[in-house]
Image: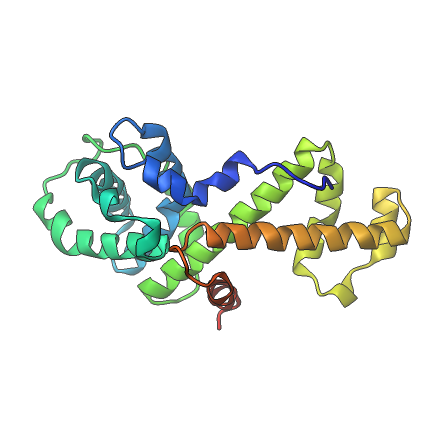
Length: 239
């Protein structure tokens, strides 16, 4: 694994720099990046809040449209708090106030494009645990960070032409150390058992680093990263 891996373009989706860039009217790419990253946690929140699939699609689409049209992102800044909190509070306010004002909105109207796959969204939502709206939003937010870290890790392996090693080892990220069969892994990777152990250790270490960086990138300046990491891990564990 390279000593100084370059950041993955996909990993940048959690960075506050993207949020700041999306404030500008000509920053369509930055806004689309935010939409791609965070539409599902918000969609899951809206669905669990009692809205039908079609209404949830419209609400999520219109919410991101309002982020642009009403310049809501101008009130978001790294020094003001967690980005996940900003988005959830903004969505709650939108559901209470803005949607009722635009109840005549027609599907397919002038809405900022969000890559929302309706079938995929409902398939994912059907598998969600029975949690309150806020709790399901927190869980999907945590899962988004986890997925982004995994994607960034895979991109690093691809960049170093080691895609095969990544796919051979990625299951080790969710296993206890004692349950990893290094002998089988060594046979798959065509290396010694000792080399397999070292590779898994580096894989897990790098994943933790990327996960931590992704969490840190969504926090306000001066906020404790370790505290937020514990919160995210607890959410993922269902504690």
